[in-house]
Amino acid sequence: MHPCYMYYGPEHGKRQGLVNNLKSALVKNYGDALDVHKYYAGEDTPEQIISDLDNGALFASHTLALIHNAESLSRKSDIQHFEKFLKSQNPDVTLVFVSEQSRLDSKLVKLAAAEAREICWELFDNQKEGWVIQYLRKQNAGIEDDALELFLSLVGTNTQEMQQELDKILLLFDSGEKPVISADVVESYIFHAKEESVYTLFDAYAARDFSRALEILSKLRGAKSHEETSILIRFSYLVRNLAGLQAISSERRLEPADFTGRRILGKRNQNLYRNLLSRLDEATVLSHIRSCNEFEMALREQKSNLHHHLIQLWLYSLFHPVKNFFRSPRAKGMFGVDHQRFP
Image (cartoon, rainbow, N blue to C red; front, side):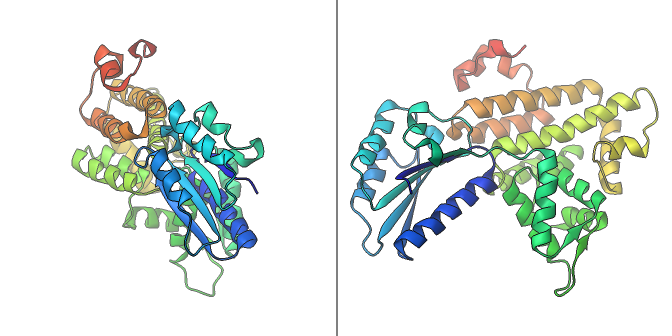
């Protein structure tokens, strides 16, 4: 066991899995009396966190301190507080720094031994397919090939969200039977489930309903499995599909294979794209792709306390064009963005 761990990167499910595994290992070492404290850098100061940990736990033999938003810890003095605490070699506390960002301050990262650090990258498409099949197999269930493609095209990019949605779909089947999920089941669930997803956000975008889109975005941000960068990446993929279909339709009539080749499956899904093709011109779609790219870059570069404003401004730009926002000196003043980087 190590006194300090560093789990960071955009794959929420893997990060949570690492934390859960560490909890289990600590319980095995120290018994069930494990005290878990959650802190949020930027809200809880290093002094407050360390003072709390120095007081010790009254009834627990060990304390696990989860420090979220670790990307906010960039000041030298903040990191030195934790460095000093770790040098005191308190055997009753394990520190875990957690962040959705893939880059943290190098001095902070070095607080954890190399084998106690892990960057949690999102899975590649072929890895996601394998993950879904393996997860369903453990649940004594299966999924048809076209249903798997449709599911991955509609659901978010992290394993925790995929697991949650698969569990909900499996509840549609009677207990005792070995379910095999079809494309019809996936499509019916996605569009009739009460929970919002990036795809229902795209649905509101297609209907040009800004109020509903803003409401959906707010709900997505309230869910731990939907982080701002993940929302943008997934949404950008859907808009790029639209641009691809637009390029084909300018030369010839669209065929069913044009949709399935882009993993746009299900009649409702395909009709939604057809509707968008009739409403948005090529220049508008390209401007929306550019907006996704620019705001994704800004989200990765800016601190988390600005993400709320950035993601809302991004959504606004899809309905009410914000011309050359990131190419203006004003953007640098508001967010510290180097406007010269945006051509």
